[in-house]
Length: 369
Image (cartoon, helix red, strand yellow):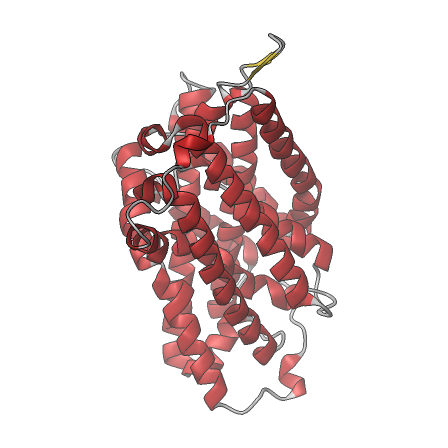
């Protein structure tokens, strides 16, 4: 029997997709048309989501690593599974570094990054030790808070009369070519293609009735939110300033001033960014640990220790934050489609060539200890 409710799944999709996305100027290469690139990428991500859901439906509740072995054979499936574990750990490491850098810049200027990142990894490790049910309960509580807070900030931005629509004009000045180059593969890889992590979570859902509908609605809701956020940054700061800004949404919120009462809300925004970063980092960390457990067995807490140690140490490999952002938004997003598009497509083809799984092989598999 699974352990996660459909309501918790919806909340997890929303908060996971928001995650660290407000940190970055996504699609800035398309200038004032970056919001169009976001729309195109979100539609491509929707197709990927349907692909993931079809794989989930085809294989019922078979754990993801077992599914790879079933589709590709024991050796090739194990190799693919190990690559996915590395991918999840790398994604988690990126969020740890983001957390450390943003904290050091905005709140704890005199605190060593090593201490900040060690604390966040230890907190995530504790959450993993408690199990995925506990993580999802926390997400269930935090998601409404995050959504209401972001909505309030958007209302305050509108109230401050900061919006200038002329900053996104002319629309499609250089045609669709810059939009498509920005959307593929960069924006599809981050954040929309990251939905593939739910191939590990879906088998743990207790009642799978309407699973696809809930996943699609949650995805479309957060995609619309991210597109609106992108347009707000553009209409407030303009494409040039957005592209040059390290934290565009934070810079946008710093301009809020309502009746000489509500202003300097950047600390509040920073806390929201921390919330999203922590949840995204923790879920990728969980996926790496859970995948490794499916591959080689043994106790969960042993894997939490080893994977957490690797994530923590690897977060110091990049020399500075500028290099970290450049590597993520210019190099990593070119590699991620291997895990988000290529391997899932090959997995689907392999499953179609095999006979459907018998009912006995589709028994729900709870998260092991």
